[in-house]
Image 1 (tube, rainbow, N blue to C red):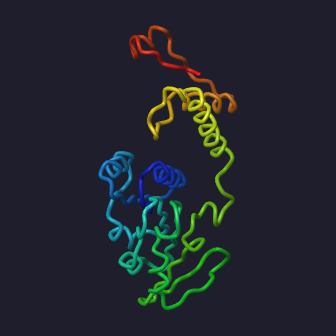
Image 2 (image 1 turned 90 degrees about the vertical axis):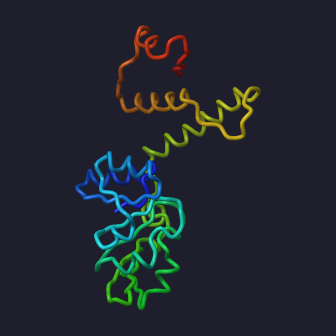
Image 3 (image 1 turned 60 degrees about the horizontal axis):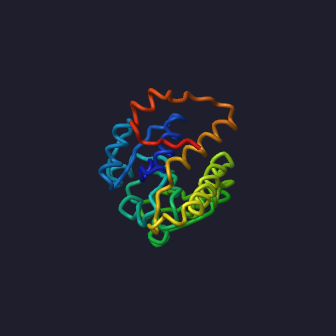
Length: 210
């Protein structure tokens, strides 16, 4: 079960589906919810998903996404983790208060026995699971993230006399430059628009390619 269908939640859902999981998505944003539906996922409220899920992953950046109402509906052995921000997405304070017993099931996994006798398990105490219980982000992802940051800083310096907004979107040309470099490093080639195609799509508009 994936809570949240932003870019991280979408990635988690797609990866879980690729590994053979039947994925349920919970959302508060109607646009993201319908995106999940169109991508082939089951979408429902958290309290309805709670009795069904074997493995829960929060990817929202919000607080109290999974709370007491959901804990008490979960089945024996349900596993909870957070891949969003802090240890508040899974309401750890509420879970600890609710539990009649807690114990270390294995390294980085804590079991919490609820008043109804069901035991649920939390990975890394509800902290960011890929950092607290894993090896962090793989280099294959972080190199692109750092490249975007470096290229964006370069763009800001080059355009410092014309940039007026405090917050700016990363220019498409920067995104494209990093994507092209990454593809080249992987020895992947893609097609290129012909002048005729470029004119058809963009007219007289300049479409930068770095």
